[in-house]
Amino acid sequence: MCRKGFELMRSVDRAPLTHCMYCKNPVRKKIGTVNVPRITAPLSISDAKKAGFTVMQKRDQGVYEKL
Image (tube, rainbow, N blue to C red; front, side, top):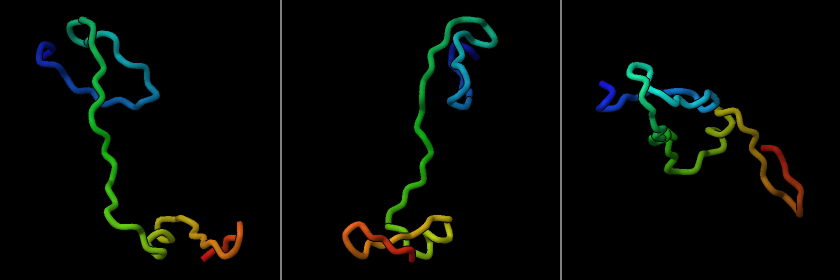
């Protein structure tokens, strides 16, 4: 199992492993892809509000109005 490698998902704030849990050989940290949702179209105002965002629109020089 160790020669083929293993996958261990840990939070970023935890210290990285330095040795294999089974054979005690040194290990390397390999970072895979991150699962981020892709948004292909801009959110509508109603979608942004449903998601909990405050929607503002610029009215004048430096003046914004809440929608």
